[in-house]
Image 1 (cartoon, rainbow, N blue to C red):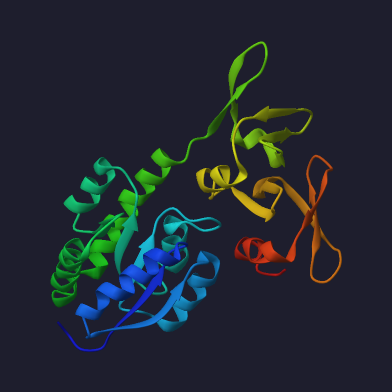
Image 2 (cartoon, rainbow, N blue to C red):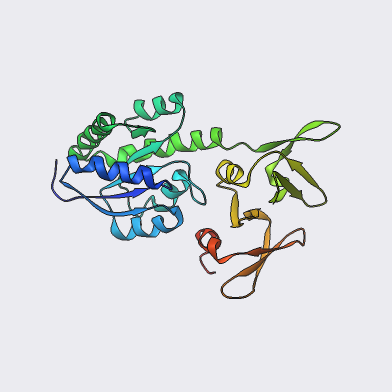
Amino acid sequence: MKAEITAIIVDDEQLSIDIILEFLKDFPQVNVIGSFRKSSEAVGKIIALKPTLLFLDIQMPVLNGFDIIENIIGTHNPYIIFTTAYDQYAIKAFEVNAIGYLLKPFDREKFAKAMARFESGYASNAVDDTYNRILRILEAKQKESRPDHIMIKDAKRVFFLPITEISYFEAAGDYVKVVCDRNSHLINDSLSHLENKFASDFIRIHRSHLVNRDCIKEFIPYFNGEYQVVMQNGDQLKMSRNYKDNLKAYFPGL
């Protein structure tokens, strides 16, 4: 291995970060220069710090692994080891195309194998060719993993509603209200699940609201750094400060 290998870890689960840090003790030549649970904070740090190696979770709120790659590609292209809970077919596709991955839960032996694949690519300076393959595969996988409809069941029928017609999701006790321009529906789901499922299209702005970013009309300053988020259907929703980073990831001027 070459000298001076730096690494950044991005994963919304602290346990996964801790496991990677523990296993990296077997690789003293790797210097971890940052770890991030908020993907929105990670993009700027990756570009600024330019790590050699990036451990990257795929399914995360706000920006998923695909979004992060799209944001850093062309400015800095680190080697990537994905930490993912994707199915075996997706993992096989990554493997065939010589992209590092760790299928959760992973052990020390599997970690060492992923690092060996990194060593091989790093020694041959193969990162640029690998990135071209990454982009092609991720585009395909992203389309497969992002449903464009949601199933609605009411007293009379079951139908599929395009997510482009949904303005926002609102917590309603044990249910979630699906709000469209002129009507709404109740579904038996949770905001957390929907946030992960539609992470590239919807933004969590409050513990009770998940909004379609393409349906946001304007932001009105409110109080103590908070905003009122005005939707295209006229509804005004409060954005809490705890979720401001989510909006700033897509609207940096806030």
